[in-house]
Image 1 (cartoon, rainbow, N blue to C red):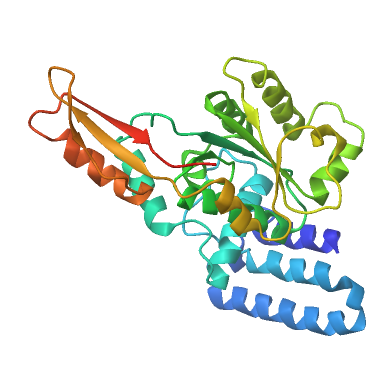
Image 2 (cartoon, rainbow, N blue to C red):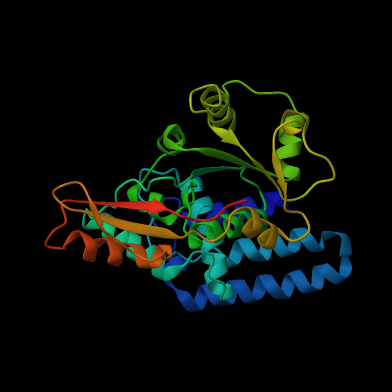
Length: 313
């Protein structure tokens, strides 16, 4: 079944002459293919019940084929571009919004206009690490965790972050962002456990290079803090058994919110004498840009800063 999925991805993503496939620009044809895949999966699911999970993922792969509204830059390999965009396309077609659309659009517009916020004092920056899965539904579940953290106001580094895709960041570019992070959050699932239990290949994979850098940064001052997010599996991998972890296996979003509560920020404006003359009420991430812009435009404002005032466990 994996071979069938791979064939569909390759056949639909690119024609033999390297151009975009006819199907991606013909929405009625795409709809017919999705419908046919769903009907076939239902028939085969009755005949081979043990294949139900694989068939569901095959249907999800086909549903993810239509092009997303935001293009992936050509600097990415074709397979990487598909993997980056597929979970978001699937969720969009299913009516589930993984990423806060209002906050995302606000950030993208500000980036393009060069209106960057200053470094937020006391705010953690989270690097989310995971092993890409051959089944799109597994990566979609990871997207849900990343999307919740982003929507709750956390500064995250995640290779399928639409803001990074918009810039055309490569895997190496994303990995180097870890140097500015405070936390390393590896996602522990069966796929990662199987990978860690096997021999390391040569040359090292992108995941190996990522973990090597995380281990190095854990020895710096201040150290990069590891916190594993355990999403499935009966046992922690040996490589992570002694490191702090958060058990998300029963209620992932509830447990994640308990450990990472919704962020609150305060904007502080200073006058020429260096005295703070304005402090905002604690506000959420979506209100932050407008509040900061208003405080910065004040007549007496010489300097303006943002402080993370979130009560955390």
